[in-house]
Amino acid sequence: MQYSPLLILHICAGTVGLLSGGVAISFRKGSRWHALAGRVFVVAMLCMSGAGAWLALVKFQPSNIVGGTLTFYFVATAWMTVRNRSRETGFFDWAALLVVLAVAVVEVTFGIQASTSPTGKRFGFPPALFLIFGALALLSAVGDVRMMLRGLTGTQRIARHLWRMCFAWFVASGSVFLARPHLFPVFMRKTGMLVFLTFLPLLMMVFWLVRIRVSKAFKKKPVASQAVLDRAGMQEQSSLG
Image (cartoon, rainbow, N blue to C red; front, side, top):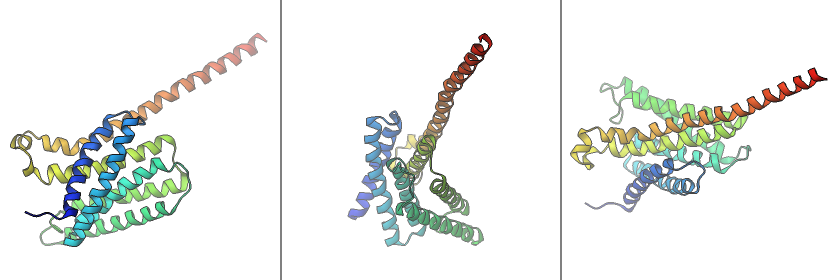
């Protein structure tokens, strides 16, 4: 069987994206190795989603066109979140917002069409899948508008970067482990390992988001304690005086 160069790029980039995503999430955030693996992940995922969306366009697979576009959006906006630390809204922000709004409209439309279809599906998928991704796209658009209006704190910036990268990683893992289980040994299918590998990006996302929140809470406590000590010291000095 002969494969086109674009399909080979799509497959190879997806493989590199899955592996580099696992490496990046394993290292401490902000470390040199995390940054290096993250750059590899970004390039690989942009190539994978871009090539996939183009292949889907050529074959006229609307659901895959939208899925590839949404994945490209997640990776690009997550990368720009940490690269562009200025609060100024630029062309990229407006373009990304328009893209994700278009994706949301298309996904919801497909979901409605699937729900009213005699087969209960659209392009072979049930309405719930389209509506879930449509809702996710709408929430992403809301997040974009909020960022453009109010900016981001340090913790919010990390959280935005993290969940968007992890969700793109999840889309890639689902496209391999769940959509193509025949590529893997029988024991991986029977033991549920493919399901675990599919949802591992989301599990890691939850873990790191909780850790970020907990770390922020612990960082605030010493500051509050110091303020209490300073207040007590001032009261003691006034009583002595």
